[in-house]
Length: 64
Image 1 (cartoon, one colour):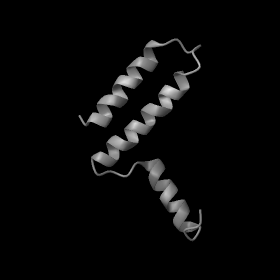
Image 2 (tube, one colour; image 1 turned 30 degrees about the vertical axis):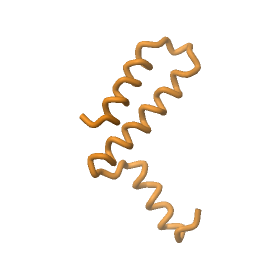
Image 3 (cartoon, rainbow, N blue to C red; image 1 turned 120 degrees about the vertical axis):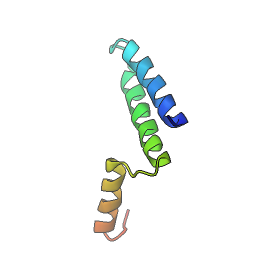
């Protein structure tokens, strides 16, 4: 397991152990998604959401 995936797992475990009433629960989930994207890239994969962003950029002529 890559260090990114290990970190994502740790953050996810921490988020799961917290009660949802805490405001940073959603932030933890977003952080976990970010680490998951990094883990995929680390393994040579392009995550679906990144692929969609790239395709949208290409469809729009490269404009941001």
